Amino acid sequence: MRRYAFTLLELIFVIVIMGILAKYGVELLSQAYRSFIFSSINNALQSNSAAAVETIASRLQYRIKDSVIARETDGTFSALAGYTAGTAPILEWVGGDIDGLRGNSSTLPHWSGVIDLNLSSAASLVSPGTDTGAANTLIGVLSNGGSGINDAALYFVGSDSDINNYGWNGVALTDHTTSVVHPINADANSSRFVSGIGGVDFTGTNVYEYYQLAWTAYAVGISDYDTAKKTGTLMLYYDYQPWKGESYINAKSIKIMDNVSTFRFKAVGAIVKIQVCVNSDLVEDYSLCKEKTIF
Image 1 (cartoon, helix red, strand yellow):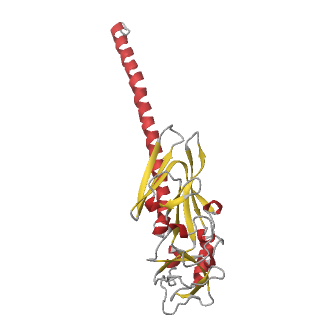
Image 2 (image 1 turned 90 degrees about the horizontal axis):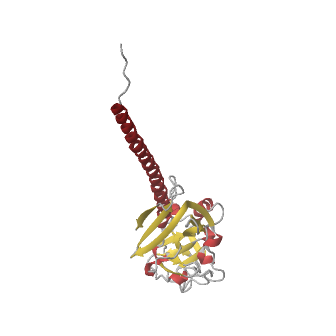
Image 3 (image 1 turned 90 degrees about the vertical axis):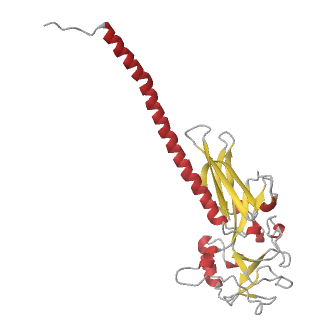
């Protein structure tokens, strides 16, 4: 028997086929790997940016709508409703105490949101169904002991709103006649509020039947900005009272998200639109943005 080796033509075909597989097979594997990496990064950024805007929206939806401001880096501010530049880094607002209004499963709301105009006087405001003791306990828990009912303020629904009379300028409110929010203290009677401004009662104050109770303002902005990476950490600030002259700079804070390149916001009537853009550490110049509209 004779054994024949590959012919030259067969060897050429084998070499050509192996070359094609080597060239395009590696490219296909590389492309599949890149697609997997981008898909994984995109899913992570989608999830994180969605969580970021939802965290902001969950608090912003209970804002006192006339209180929302855009604050510049130099500390100046303006009402968001009339702000057109769109480049301010800090969004601030006073939030209504929705947790206290809900109460819990076994009790009524801790504050009723109603003032009895017939029973109220310059010395005190009577709010039937309100339990300032329960509200004080809940505020203490939510603020980790930082605030209580005597740090709170009332906003009368339907009252005139001047953005300069919330205390955003860092100066504590000194009267109730020009203030938009009204600092209050609890009274011995748990359904009654007295003035939280020393030596000043509610004389001359336009008191409305319905109110919202607030114990904190909120601020959102990017901190620790890295100019090389063009990203920073998106932070939420809380447990501070502008009506007492306090600022978000010295407030409690929590991290919302890292590697945030852009935080933008604007008002369209009473609606607020926010946008958060986040970068990836793994892929250069790759970012993803998420937007949300809050009514």
